[in-house]
Image (cartoon, rainbow, N blue to C red; front, top):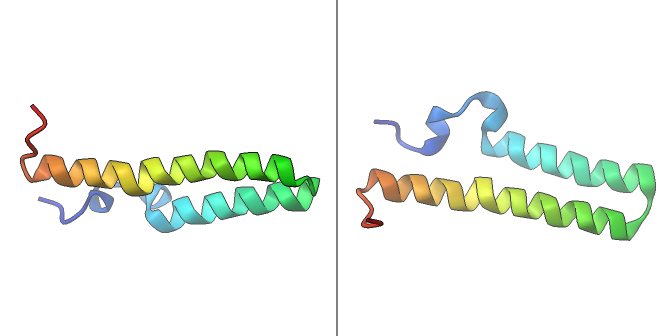
Length: 71
């Protein structure tokens, strides 16, 4: 049994790559457009993506491995 959900994921779906991609997209938005309101919108989408893949998905996986009482 893997120690964490990240042991099951390829290199491009690891926490470091998710964070690096998000920071690059937000930074790129600012560098290219210099519009704070677009960059803020991009940041909101990236933050939701981070929440889903870096917080909620690993927590759900951990609960399922522990025999969670969801049913």
